[in-house]
Length: 194
Image (cartoon, rainbow, N blue to C red; front, side, top):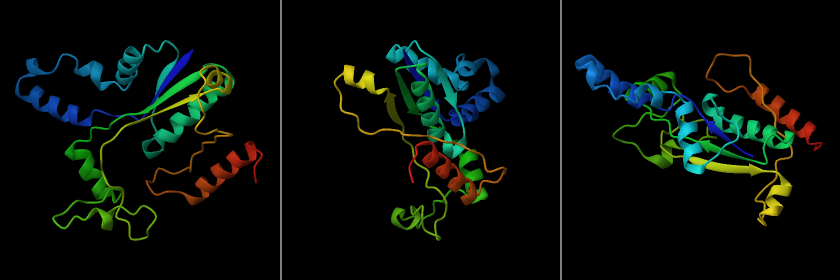
């Protein structure tokens, strides 16, 4: 069977804000599908319908780590034999102005200004980085077991030898180097690599 994992959560914040405006003016004009669209599982339903996926399907939310968490879960499903292939989709997060300003205030997102120059702002590994640069995009990756890929006569673009996840034990938005190193070491150990 084929599984589906959507990476992310709270995709519809802009829709929440727009429907709140309608609600406070005239409640009867709120989109009747708002409650269904608001649920993260709604995206699972839409993509499973488009691709006719009948296996297991979930959303995995973990902030900036959502994509990695989705791939970890897909790896576990394929490795265990629960599915022969798993479609992982990173959906668009429709941030409203409220979320964008909150990330700026938190110091996690670069603030756009009249002097905004992308080459000076988008530098994730530079000490002078101003936070992440908001953009919109979506991606999809398919993981499948080796036999399934061979039966389809496709060339594998890569192989996952191991995957690990772990918490830093903190509520802070600051990255934890200790936790990142620990998880990487666990993954290397499980893959029996130095």
